[in-house]
Length: 86
Image (cartoon, rainbow, N blue to C red):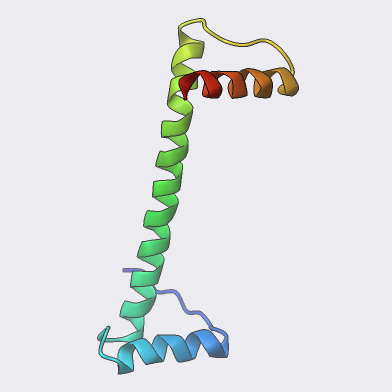
């Protein structure tokens, strides 16, 4: 493990201590580790969601199916596709 020292604002310091005092964590280090782990997992989930959202469009582009035009035309076509899907 590597060591990182940090100063927290008073409200966050109180929160960290309260988590330990409530018995939810064994130490302040455990609170910080859990918080950073959760942040990392949330970031990974966002990246995966973006990749999943882009996958259909990338597959269409790879297959040579793409739309030429400006942003307004692309948005109009997207709205039309959504309306047809409903």
